[in-house]
Length: 249
Image 1 (cartoon, rainbow, N blue to C red):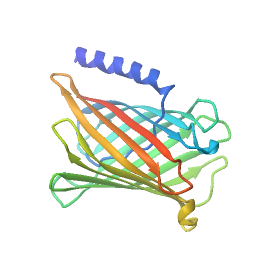
Image 2: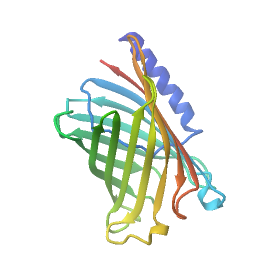
Image 3: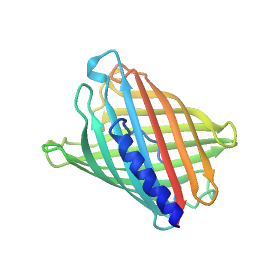
Image 4: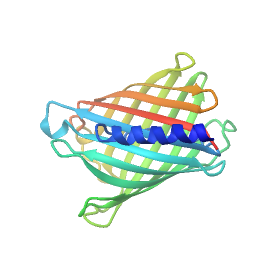
């Protein structure tokens, strides 16, 4: 326990230091919850584009989570952000929850539910509630995960209606440490008021995922993806990544 605690503290310090340089937000969530598993994680994403209004955006998230029961994982997350052509700042604190609805492997698909409350730190901005189903299924060696998420804005400058987005990741194992595949992020807008397809957000591209086990200490999981803008409303390129340390106590 002492060694694990030291590793966790060291990783948190490293991730906080990295957060000022990177960005994170894009992620496909798994519906699977493991009771008693703690995790320390950072996510990042950064955009590039020939258009000044869409290049240079970055986000970095640092979070700590725990599998409270066999069906509920809770997570607290801090987010740093830099808008295109803007300055970096601490953006928000979030409380995330994943509820595993079905027993893993019992049905054709594993189903969960995601709920997040995001409290923003910038004066004049609005808070958000995001929720929706998480679905994961296996076809032979393939693992495909789909997220369908809805967002409702609260407070200052909040917009009417509900935002919608869908995320999908499909990977196949390459060896014991790496899986490769594709993923896509579709952000069409608000329900009932989707703009033309060319004005909707859609990014897709290759992704690598995997984990490395450290005997007696837990495991390190990672993701690295490169997304290309499919529509004119999307950044031309986005690099995103996740590094996560998991252990039991």
